[in-house]
Structure formats: structure tokens, C-alpha cells
Length: 181
Image (cartoon, rainbow, N blue to C red):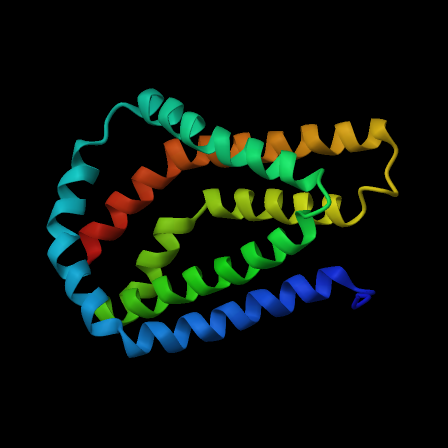
């Protein structure tokens, strides 16, 4: 069995490999995806104009993200947490680079701003929460139960802040960005 000393560095390397693979694949198949983005752009704009119920959106986000958060927390307590987080790290880099490449090929330099409008600010909080969860799973044998529970509460709080920002800040940013496209 391979012994890895710096598990965090492996997660970063897999994320970067995912970015490289996602960029290459998105460039190879970008014409199909760019065509789909141009078809759905008016539809997305109409949906954004219709978003007025912020509390309804917040509860929808909490309901949909709750299962993901619960699965990640339960998974971080298992033996297979590290291999799954390695796959998740590579997959996240892959998806992120595909979105950036396709948005840039479709909208030019404004595509990068559109990508940032889609992921900011809530994915900053989700990213911090997932990174803390990954670090927690890498060090789970070393932490006493009391500190583990405290760190899980902090992670849940960070995810809640992300959900709040997704419900209140993100629709406004998306409306602002799509008016510019």
C-alpha cells in the first residue's frame, strides 16, 4: 500500500489535474456546449427576472444542500473519506475549468465575469467548508470528540452562511451580470 505523508498536497494536485483535463476536454467539445449556452441564455434571463421570493429560494437551497452537507459530513467520518475526497477534488477542478472555458468561448472576457457571478459569493463559503471537512477527515484520529463536534458545528455554520449568500446575494449578482451580456 502506498503511504502518503502530505494528504492535503495530493488533494491540491488532483484539483489541478482536474483543471487541466477539464480545460482540454472543454476546448475539444466547446462548440456543442457554447451552442447550448446561446440557446438557454434568454431562458435564464427570464428566470432571473422572475426571482422575487427570496425566502422561498432560501428554503429550497437549504433543502437541496442539506442532503449534500449531511452526506459529506457522514462520509468524512468513514474510512473511505480520503479516496472519495480525492475524487471530489479532481471532479471539482474539472467542472470549474469546463465552466470557465465554455463561458469564455461564448461571451469572451465577459464570460469570466459571468462565471464569477454564478459562483460568488456562496461557493467561497462552500469551498471553505469542504476544505475544512477534508482536513477534518484527514486528521479524524487525532482530534478528541469534543473538538470534532465543535469543528462540525463551525462547518455547518459556514455552509449556512453560504446558503444565505446564495439566496440573497447571488440572484442580484446574476441579474446584474446578465444585463451586461
